[in-house]
Image 1 (cartoon, rainbow, N blue to C red):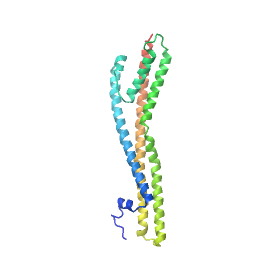
Image 2: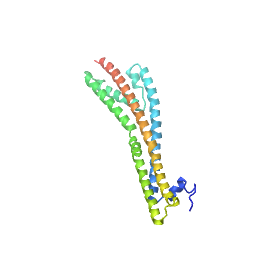
Image 3: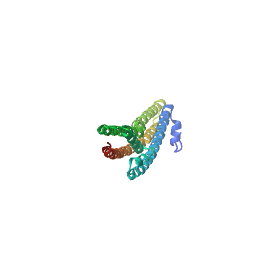
Image 4: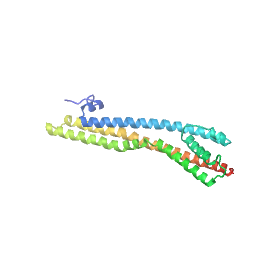
Amino acid sequence: MVKTAETMSPWALFLQADIVVKVVMIGLLLASIWSWAIIFERSKRLRQIDGEAEAFEERFWKAKTLDELQATKGSHPTADLFRAGMDEWQASVEGRANVDREGVRARLHTVMAASIDRSVSDLSDRLSVLATIGSVAPFVGLFGTVWGIMRAFIAIGATQNTSLAVVAPGIAEALFATAIGLFAAIPAVIGYNRLLHRITRLEDRLQGFSSAFHALMSRELDGVH
């Protein structure tokens, strides 16, 4: 049978592949879809967080008193950090006759650092999936490649025919599995590195806000008797 472009198309190669190679291909395609879903979802969330954080910080620095600061609300890492610091401030200072200033400063630093860690951990949660897909997918594709080449050699041995018509389908299936493995791995690796960079940049921004907020609360603390 002469192999035409139609019979050597990706869909035809998938249909001609045996069950093992089909499972490999389907698994890699599902992994690719999963990685793209994570990339789009995290990118959208980080873009939203950046916009909300910028607006929040602008309102924050325009506030003149702690009462105004308390009215500055939001639902994103910067707002969570602010809320954690204010909750600790109120629990440690308000209604107390004697205030341990150094103890309050230490607790403020601790709770704000914990807030940053929680936010970063939440945003980094699915990055491990991208890292896993990026590192494992090429080897899964390689397994499909090896299996397809084995089938090609078995076909040669069974037919005693080394013509391209006999060898080509198995090798084409094998190379197709490799291509799908790379198709899944490359975007996952790029997405992982890009998202990690953005999360690291956000963490630096939160650290800077935390330091400035801690300094502000420390000055307020100096005025507490």
